[in-house]
Image (tube, rainbow, N blue to C red; front, side, top):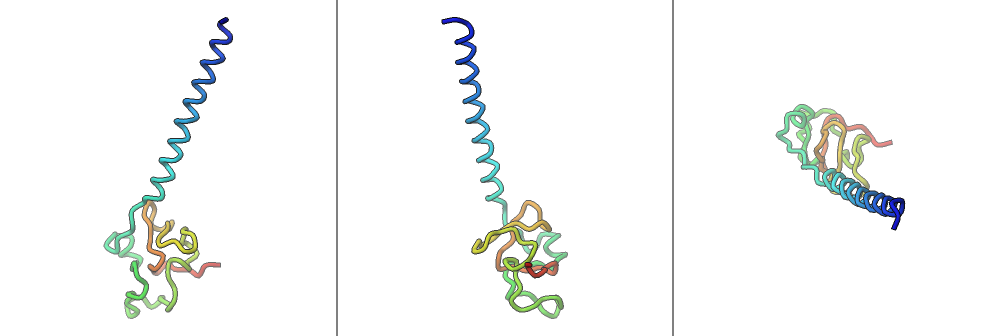
Length: 110
């Protein structure tokens, strides 16, 4: 076996190991995003925006902007897919909001 063949096999082995490691790292990042914690109504940002995990529990006397039927799932800021129980929102980075929730930053989805 000459040194060129040995180097070629070694390079392929290193490449394959790096590819496997990169795939594992990407899978870990994807699952970390999916496992983002739910936003608590007591969170400072949530309180400031009047967030409720259940839009039917919004105090309409305190939240004049609330419109019956509005919720996170039909908000233009909601990043979850149709049918998801929860999803991301750029206003609450790193946390998920309930699809049934609401806050006073709600804007009708286009």
